[in-house]
Amino acid sequence: MPIIINLDVMMAKRKMSLNELSDRVGITISNLSILKTGKAKAIRFETLEAICKALDCQPGDILEYK
Image 1 (cartoon, rainbow, N blue to C red):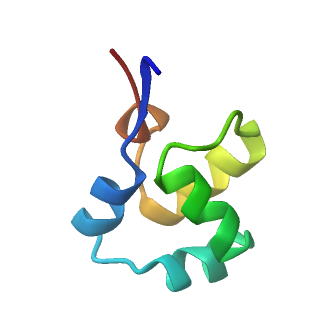
Image 2: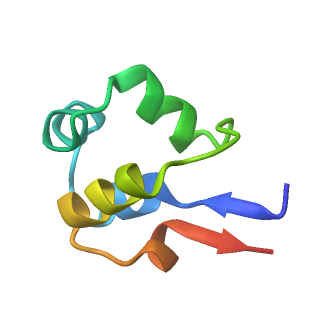
């Protein structure tokens, strides 16, 4: 898959756990885990916006094209 999800990298930079991000974004831990491991097939812009807001980052910090 040429799209790489760097959610775990941004969470580590912000010292944020999966539980804390789940609480802030309002997404279940299992759905965040699927996204974090790169197994997700899609992501809603609403969800991406909420994650970026919680992690204080840009979408390009989370998504990478290779």
